[in-house]
Length: 135
Ligand SMILES: [Zn+2]
Ligand SMILES: [Zn+2]
Figure 1 (cartoon, rainbow, N blue to C red):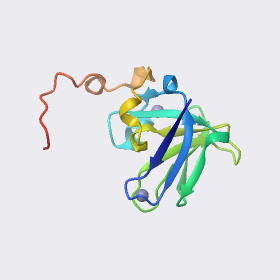
Figure 2 (spheres, rainbow, N blue to C red; figure 1 turned 90 degrees about the vertical axis):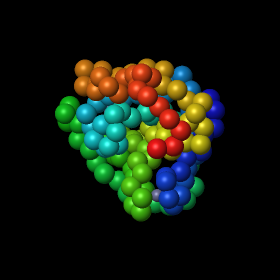
Figure 3 (cartoon, rainbow, N blue to C red; figure 1 turned 135 degrees about the vertical axis):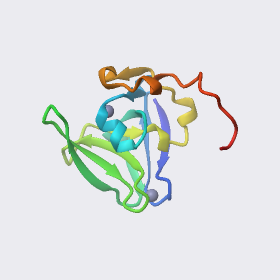
Figure 4 (cartoon, rainbow, N blue to C red; figure 1 turned 180 degrees about the vertical axis):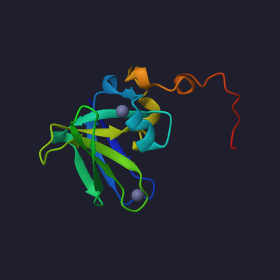
């Protein structure tokens, strides 16, 4: 387990937790595409005992999956950055941390891709897209 440090884009919300880098997951579900406004989402679970909210008060959006399971999605009320998600409980077993908000993200590549049936083909491998520094 390693300690990670997270924050939203504006810095109001910050938190820390401990994670197993082997559990970093890339999710291709349609909800993750919409909730991130991107091609997929990368998350890693932190056991609740290791999670600590340091500053700010995230706003919560309860998302109900196709399966009917509700899930609490937390985001910064000021900048909108998604920071974590949990089971719909006041004492959830773990916090799913959004890897893009973690200071250590460069060292946290995904180890598994899930919900591949709804994957955007173009989002699975962009290594062939011409790339430049800056825009
Ligand atoms: Zn923020
Ligand atoms: Zn997903």
